Length: 378
Image (cartoon, rainbow, N blue to C red):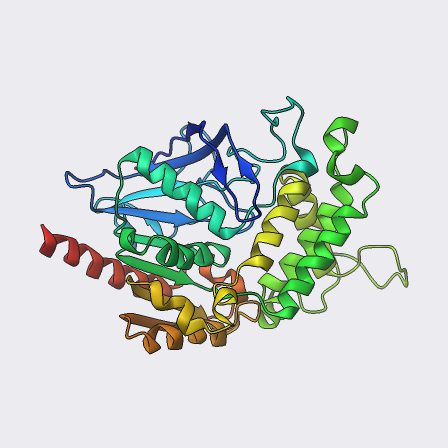
């Protein structure tokens, strides 16, 4: 029997103070839960999502084909994060376009769609909102917080903002901040969106249009960075589309890789919100816990008391293993309990979403340790 997921939503009337100095009130957070919270409420695991994911982390929606959660390989009954043991919570972040309050919703002060006026949100803001949701669910302390990529940054931030509320942190394919190359990729993607004639300064909703051209290009740029060179060559190489010979055209789609990227861009532009893309990539750019500590990462991580598992992938050039090792060193400098796995996987950054036996085995083993810790404490 597949795990059946049920979307839920909570309303928060009280203002949430944001890092920018602005605040947000009367907002909603979409979330899903899997498994059962135990009697002493000690087995909760929070899953933080990456750029274009959502609260639908695992399972399927009843009666809907191809509705698997984005981390369904990882989470569920008998899986590495075993929902027969753990109460797993997936939350959609503020500013997203999958149910939580974002640019597509109305500003409670004006009644108009937020659009480009939605306040800039940061990783820290998301963590604060998640903490409020956990309060409402009656979860005072997490057995673990876990995320990949941008989700890993949120997991790390949890250990710094609410150290007393986190026993373990699982940070996968992530980094302590973005390097200049990553910020550059994000900026090119944002320029593609804001220069689309249908963007209208971010208020395209009022014009009844969507800046699909910009979204397509943004997704194509992003997708290139998620895959490794080896995977691209293995899947596509220099193959032409089926039945084609060279057309000697600068306009036609001739290579398989071109066709694939166009397909990914078209699909993305049909469901993702342009303002959300701008907000989330900016949150990625801003994240840097060492900024307030003169760039010293060890000082920044001194506040963390959780035990850590960090995982990286050898062909991930967007969040390279060296970035995870920076985190490992900074945590060890603080004498923290750290496990680290560097997986030789060919898939690039996308490896954290895929089914790799070694990777899943590492996570399974770590969560078995967490389950033993819970058992010993009871």
